[in-house]
Length: 264
Image (cartoon, rainbow, N blue to C red):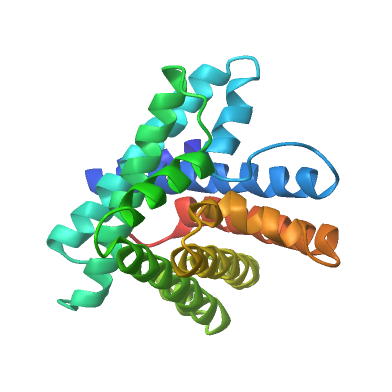
């Protein structure tokens, strides 16, 4: 992380913000992956971003770590929002990448807020919060359609991640010549496995939200934690959840590689 920050400090300020943000995101996904594997083996924990941060908070100096991660997540949000406002590197004037960056910026701004709320004493799980939001929206006229469309958008976003991982589209951020061929191969493999795993988890999350709207059951709209817990409750659930956890862990490691080597 120190190397990435030092490298970024020699460039534009946005580089530093982006790399700190990517580092924080990578750490959070590593924690989520570890939690998923532990839950697969019988541990009790919420396997989502807030659950991961809550586990850190219980450790020595956990408050400092969560505070630093909150700053990093806020930095990631600012970077993505700046892309939405001024354009995505390498994408020219295309609207699609800017819309994606806007969505990511808003999501990670909320995650930064979540980290701060933990430091202030919040103990409501992320899944419970999402269920509450879904219930409130579905109680309004047309609310079930809104929740269903939101779930569909998440599911489609997950499938897009799967395609991007399978087609190695993320490698455009790692130009040939910027690192050794061996290192580039490692990043390619980590990115492919991690992005596909993350996409599948997001797709399942979206499907559950659509199901919540269809059945008028907000309990199904419990986010990433609900999706991963659903895997655990299926035949071969321990294996499926372990594979998902390892995939998220790999994505987190890939995220740290992004923080160091990605072109931003």
